[in-house]
Amino acid sequence: RLQANKAAIKAMLVNRVGDFGLALGIMGCFTIFQTVDFSTIFARASAFSEPHHYFIFCNMRFHAITVICILLFIGAVGKSAQIGLHTRLPDAMEGPTPVSASIHAATMVTAGVFMIARCSPLFEYSSTALIVITFVGAMTSFFAATTGILQNDLKRAI
Image (cartoon, rainbow, N blue to C red):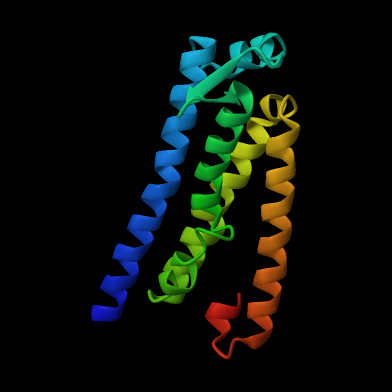
């Protein structure tokens, strides 16, 4: 089916945006902490929370932990279909119901939530990232509830 193929391509491209953010976040962790081991990163995070640890981009300074947290969050947004990268989710339901249910309930959507929960000790050192996460989550909840009310197709409403 042509529509299912278009939906698959769209889902793949939107997921690559999230994957790119996740990859940059991991590279940022390695650049700052010299490791990607969670326990080491969490132990060293307090030392890098001061404002004199930063990334320079276009002659502007950005707090290093905030940049890393935002990039990791972009990866989670791509997997969890939060607002901004949500466009793939309604079209991804083109497949058979059991397949779409197992993919989205068991793996894809919950992977972003798990990553944010797993990295929460790092997120504690960036109040800006926590505000962004709260705002995006609230906007996604409002948007999903509003569009769910207006849907006629049950698979799209869920």
